[in-house]
Image (cartoon, rainbow over all chains, first blue to last red):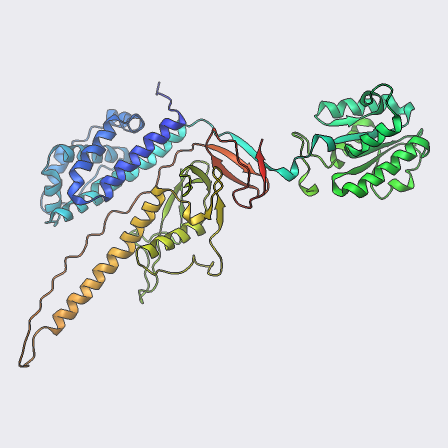
Length: 308
Length: 207
C-alpha cells in the first residue's frame, strides 16, 4: 500500500521538485550538467516523484541507449513511442543517460544542427527536458491531490452579524390559559438553539413582574404574540403590545413583532397589525412562521444578512 | 489541478500572435491553481502564504509590472480595464495591504518574468540585431569616396529558451468563507486570527 503523505510533506516535495525543475530548464547553460544530475537524483529519491515514476518504470522498459543511437545520427527523425506513458519513461531514461554520460547532449544537439554548447543544451532542454518536466508536473499534481486530506472549511463572519447574548431573547407573550401551548414553542425554540423568554421559567422568584417583563423585552430580538380565542388586548397583554412597539421603534430591523393568530381567535390588536401576522392552523405551522420571521439565522447565533 | 489561461489560446505551434505593426504582443500564461481553484500568494511584508481565487486581471497587472521592471513598455492595463486600478488585498496574517498584483509567490513572479523574456525580449533583441546586421550590410563599401571604412557585423541569434512551467500546486491549507463578500480564501491550517476581510476590510471573526 502506498505511503500517505501529510499536506506539509506534499508541499515540501513539490517545492523541491519545482526548484530543481526550473534550475534545469532555465539556469545558465554552463551549469546544465550539474542541474541535470541534481534533477535525476531527485527523480530517483523523492518519494512523491517515485510514486509517479516507479509503477511506470515497472511497466515500460524502453531502450534509451538504442533510441539515442538513432536520434544522434545526423538529422535523424525523432521517433517517440506512441504510448504516452512509455514516451514519458523513455524521456526519463534519456535524462538518466545524459546525466551519466557527458557526450549524450552534445551528440544529440550536433546531429540536429546545433554546433555550439549553448545551442545544443537549449535544443536538449526543448526536445527532451521540458516535455518530460511538464508531463511530470501534471502527474505530480494529480498524485499530490490524491494524497491531500479533504480541505476543511471555516467561515469568517462579519462582526456586525454576531449579536450580543443580551439581545437575542425571543419574548413569548400569551394569555396564562394558553401556557401549555406556549411551553411547546418554548421547548422547541430551545431545542434548536434559540433563547426564548417566558415569564415563569425566565423570572427569579419574587421578582417584580413588570420590571422583569420590560427587561425581557430589552434583551429580546423578537416578541411573539399568540392570538387565541382567549387573547384580550388588556392589562399585562396590552402593556406587552406597547413594549413590543417601543422596542421595534428602537431596534428597527433587529427586532421583529410576530403575531400568530390561531383559528377562531380574537381579532389582532390594532397596534400589531402593521407588523408580521399570520393565521395558523396548528403549532407546527405557527412554529415554521415564527422561525421564518425571526431576525436571527438558524444555527450559530447570527443576524440574518438583511438585518445588518 | 487546473490552469488559467489569459488572453487567447496559443496557435497550433504554441506561439503568441503578433500583428503586422509589431505593436501588439499577446502573452499566453498558464497559471496553475490547486484542485479547489485557488492561487497561492505570498504577503510581501510577512512572507507567509495564503490563497485566493484566481483573477486574470491581477495576473495581467503583474505581467505588466514585471515587464516595466525589465525596461519594457508593453501596455498600461489589462485589456478592457484601462480605467481600473489594480485591486487591493489584505494579508490575512499581518494585515499588510498591497495591490493584488504584488502578492504573488516568487514562483509565479519567476514564471511571469521568464514568459516575458522568452516571448518578448528574446524575439525583440534578435529582431533588432538582425535589422542592424541588414542595415550595416546594405551600407558596406565607400562607393567611390576618398575614405572608405569597411565594417562587418555578425549577430548570432539568442536561442528561444524552453517555455516556463507553472505549478503543480498542492491543495493544502484550509478554506475560509468570507460571508461579507461571499468569496473564499485559503489560509494556514493553524491560523485562526483573521480579523478583517482581505477584500473589503469588514471586521470579521473565524467561527
